[in-house]
Length: 287
Ligand SMILES: Cc1cc2nc3c(=O)[nH]c(=O)nc-3n(C[C@H](O)[C@H](O)[C@H](O)COP(=O)(O)OP(=O)(O)OC[C@H]3O[C@@H](n4cnc5c(N)ncnc54)[C@H](O)[C@@H]3O)c2cc1C
Image (cartoon, rainbow, N blue to C red; front, side, top):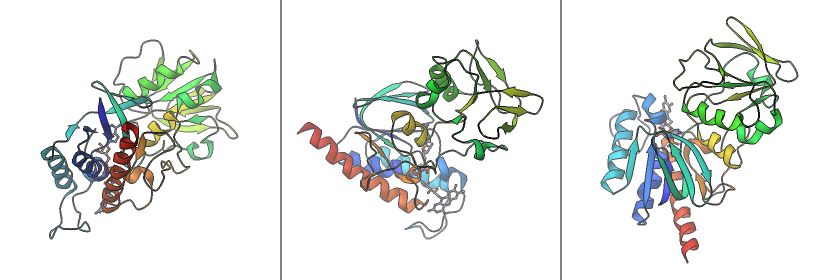
């Protein structure tokens, strides 16, 4: 059992982990990849570096720093689901972990489906959360967008509500084994309405649907938060208190996934603040 499991190894997650380790807590960081910083080769507005540095350099230094201080850092592992509460059960593509506290630091939420009709039909038949909305579409025609493990997790939930599910990989190759359901690999080009979702068009065909669930790519902090019942605002940012707690006891969030200034300095600060609050929270639980 870990005291704290941090999802995300960017500036927010690593900053939190470094402080948490100093409080002598048992901490693990799980990071799928290099996050937002993996996309940039030129940082020159972060404190302390005379010459520009690459995002890769900064992330790798962060991993190395945390490991040197004794934090377990698993890079290349993807968190797929978080269940339960105190202890939380965190399922990755490799194994399951138990932790008293989870800190979400997964960066900015993934972009939405960029096809015609998406913006106008959001909330009108389009959903990001099977656990939240699946029951609304019992025995109805459900479309599910995704091609990997995250889609499989969502399928597991949705098949309790309907057997009439079609998977749309939106041009991606299917990466997992799905036997009982139709799989369409053509890209989606339009979602059909106009008042509520009635179906979608791919490059070759039109499909009638009552709902479309999105589970493409990697689950982000807001996906986890929504499934756990934590408050997420319309901009897909997790709502946190000034000490970075969510409305779910033991669930915290920091960095870009909570909105505000999307910069390294703010993410580092969030992580540090969250760690102080988490330490206090765990102390009150043991006293
Ligand atoms: C192109 C670009 C250039 C930028 N340039 C600058 C700059 O010059 N200066 C500046 O201050 N800021 C810059 N930023 C912004 C900065 O990168 C972010 O504000 C900062 O990285 C946010 O830190 P974070 O820890 O919240 O998230 P990220 O750094 O995005 O880290 C998120 C972490 O979560 C992990 N993760 C996500 N989902 C999962 C999952 N399901 N399972 C496991 N791990 C997961 C990722 O692998 C990653 O480790 C730039 C951003 C971009 C995209």
